[in-house]
Image 1 (cartoon, rainbow, N blue to C red):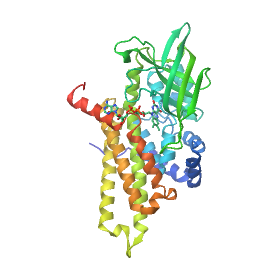
Image 2: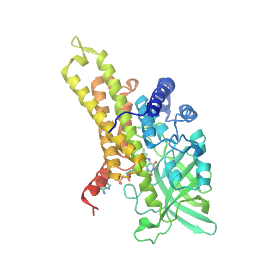
Image 3: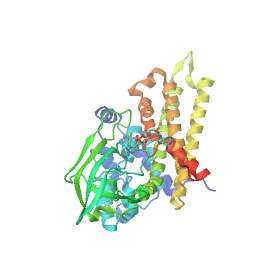
Image 4: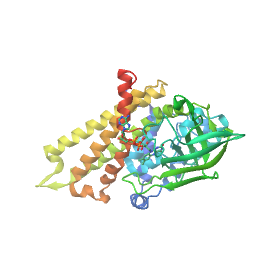
Length: 384
Ligand SMILES: Cc1cc2nc3c(=O)[nH]c(=O)nc-3n(C[C@H](O)[C@H](O)[C@H](O)COP(=O)(O)OP(=O)(O)OC[C@H]3O[C@@H](n4cnc5c(N)ncnc54)[C@H](O)[C@@H]3O)c2cc1C
């Protein structure tokens, strides 16, 4: 067993850390947070530097790296700033469905522009009435001549109002038994007639991302916009989650580490009762607990990524990493706010944003309860 990063991985980690130190401008971050704007400037530079889509093969604009390298970048970006980090890491959301199941033409058309910083992608799975349970979709895509006609609604779509194209899970056979065997995924471009995206209201955190409701009203897409095989959409999405959940664990890891860094730094400087906060044993123990939790998440997340890159699918391990990382991010950011006291409650001191941004990692890409179900069913056998 070797816990050492390779030279190339160390280089990617160093480059992404330096990128955040150089490009994450605090004033602009406050402005984007305030106006709920996607950090477009930094995103363009991140693409130019080869960070976005690093895990795409070279022929599709990437560097042929693995999920592990992507995890290192996401961790550093979210450590640098939770809001910007999450927004950047989700800019290519769901592109892995195209990567894995798309034709060579589809990959060229959609992946290369993502890596170049010309396209933002989105994955639309959740519906108003179907969140955790994706086995039945009310959004239908029915074949009519040389196209599929999509009708229905999706909700909570990240990048909904800013994406150039969407991967949409639809019911192509409403009579299939079980229903999930009648699902397929499609590529839908933002300008397609009958398609609209409406931003949802204010949200607790990740305010630099768009979260939208999508509406499909007789949206016609050519047959060539079907991804992979008809009837396999549900399986494709589950396979995608095996990878994307590791990335969410990396977001949580970076957010927790970033909050810890700020709390440690503050505790070394803040004087009370004639001592620095770090001189109180209570603070020392809090910091020790936080650092231990963060390191545990790092080990689990890195192992899940390493395992994935070896093509050993293990949804149990992925769910363990995602569940534990989310829980830890919420706990560690909470403690960071506590260590900063009243200042922790102010936006200026940043940890309140990390605290708000952490919570989503326990909800999207499958809630912590759903992760627990996945872990339990792997341990016990299929749950009823
Ligand atoms: C900011 C944001 C961004 C998002 N981005 C995307 C996106 O890009 N694409 C997308 O498709 N979706 C996205 N989502 C949706 C997200 O994945 C869902 O919100 C999540 O899967 C839960 O679905 P739900 O909200 O319908 O809750 P529900 O499924 O209604 O669950 C409500 C509660 O019941 C629990 N529960 C449900 N079923 C079970 C069960 N079997 N056992 C135990 N507990 C259970 C859940 O854990 C949860 O606590 C996003 C959500 C948010 C808030």
